[in-house]
Length: 326
Ligand SMILES: NC(=O)c1ccc[n+]([C@@H]2O[C@H](COP(=O)([O-])OP(=O)(O)OC[C@H]3O[C@@H](n4cnc5c(N)ncnc54)[C@H](OP(=O)(O)O)[C@@H]3O)[C@@H](O)[C@H]2O)c1
Image 1 (cartoon, rainbow, N blue to C red):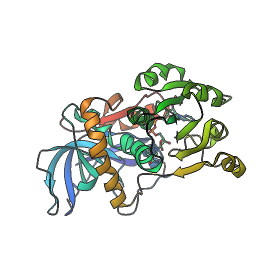
Image 2: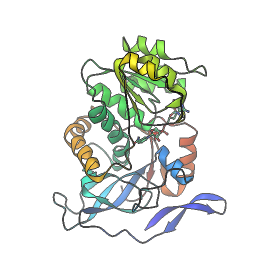
Image 3: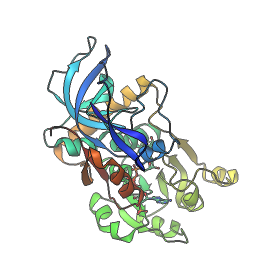
Image 4: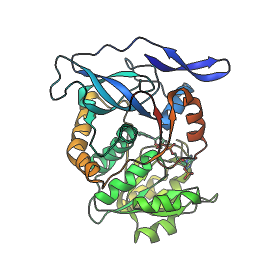
């Protein structure tokens, strides 16, 4: 199979190599990949700063959509040729992947494979927080940082679908209309990073949950936006990881801080998350209430350009690599 290789060749950090097809395990599906989503984590992994968990593919790529080619002997409920999308610990920038069947989902009929490849990482990351770690419901006020990111666009829509009022921070004013259309009141954060008053006004009160994709650089204002008894869920660290934390400020608000990253989540917990999304999220995708946001599509052999575009913060939603037959 063709797969993206990391390592400078003729000055290019990403190039295409031939690799052997993966072999399907008993509890796995072998999927012919039509499309793969690009994630910030891929950019980090490429630089050696986000290594794959032990035993996972070294090839980049955390999510794909395609068709089932082979089914492991212990797997039920799938047939050859079924359209499938899946969350991976690695290996997505390739023509074929083997994935635990418990981490795969059927593709609703209203999505093409490009759109389906934009679902798993963004929506399951959002679901991990908004359904499980800091569950959001009617009457909640949700602040989503980096609301125009792939994960942010999913979190905004999920927050709305769960009944919350949603406000989303962005730095690029040109993204405001698209964030508003997804269901969040946009707040543009300038160089002073002073957003708490505007976010509270947009939410009609303090945030009961903050879906935090930025971390350190926004932390003082994140805390100033948080309501009493509120929860900050740390999901991304685009603004850095290290802060000086005033614990008294957390105590005064009776605040909770939770934090999680999906990739190293143990197999069974990932399977439960996928199963919850199968029941709660897939019908909402099928009805159009939740929609993956695809900013643009590039072929696999332009993965390097794809990384440049993502790194330049040009996208709203996801960039997807086209790989095989759609
Ligand atoms: N915990 C997990 O399991 C998990 C899973 C997936 C992703 N993540 C994390 O979630 C974050 C978003 O990932 P993604 O793939 O959705 O990203 P993405 O689509 O590339 O979007 C990132 C957006 O964030 C904004 N941004 C960039 N640097 C920023 C900074 N220093 N401060 C504030 N905003 C900044 C930019 O938008 P503006 O132009 O509006 O500033 C950029 O377009 C990443 O940190 C990623 O590692 C975590």
